[in-house]
Amino acid sequence: MKFIVSSSYLLKQLQVLGSVINSSNTLPILDNFLFELDHNTLTVSASDLETTMSATLEIDSASEGSVAVPAKLLLDILKTFPEQPLTFTVEENSTIEISSNSGKYAIAYAPGNEFPKAQVIEEPSTTLVPSDVLATAISKTIFAAGNDDLRPVMSGVFFQFSPEGLIFVATDAHKLVKYARTDVKASEVADFIMPKKPLNILKGILGATDSEVKIDYNDSNATFSFDNYVLMCRLIDGKYPNYEAVIPKENPNKLIINRNLFLSSVRRVAIFSNKTTHQIRLKIAGAELNISAEDIDYSNKAEERLTCDYQGDDIQIGFNSRFLSEMLTNLTSDEIQLEMSMPNRAGILTPIDGLDDGETVTMLVMPVMLNS
Image (cartoon, rainbow, N blue to C red; front, side):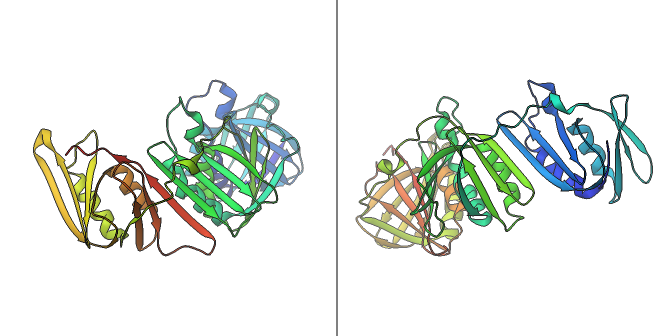
């Protein structure tokens, strides 16, 4: 088995796949890349059993076969080469020899058949989503997903597909984000919960492509195929909470304000908040928004006044400043609207401008009780 490939081309593909590999694996074989050669096509795969990703490379070869090569060692050596053709030759003595312009390097390999086989999805449903839409949906929602191992369903992003459009939801019970598109549709109704790790991998590479992503899914697995990549992952099992029930429908108090102004003010005032609760207080009366925080233990306090456009009753409401600034950072609009009903009901953040047709973003943040 022998093939020739460009060093930088191979490195670029392997760095993407390398993000799948865990730092500590239960199975030693998972520390390897699987190379499967079929004449001029080389398929390289990486897996952690839950997520498997493969890339198909066009190379120069007349042979076929499969070997598992240590991932870290291969990446380390490839990073040091200037752009040049490398020749990989599988030798009889269980080593793979790499020849470059300047030298030869031998790496021990394992037989390719020891590498776990990727599952094939039986009778999948399929939806096509433009890569930029999927990339935006992931980056707008993933930060709100939880990290609680006891509630695995909330540690992922909920995908809801229907002929009306696509909805992506993430929540950790303190904050919730719902990203919806009516300009991209699925042929049938389906929903599933995607784990965070494969979504972070997708988020990292979807920005560099402008192709459509083909999503195949059944009850237990989903596959994302685009360009020369295929990413397959196991879905989170369980029923997603009814998120519509927690979004308050009647919110008579509406505040409209410049997002950057509000964000910098929240960040500054938050420095003076209590380090465990991160609580800041919003006091709105007329066209004035008063943002304050106090850390009684250390006698630190701060207060800022901003002018805003407000319709509704005077209100005082407390929020966790970390959640609020995370959401404001994640929105990209110039102006945002904060809707509230009562100090003990969730506040709803929505962007006022900067959205595509058919795109909506709803962010919900739970209040914290104010100690008067």
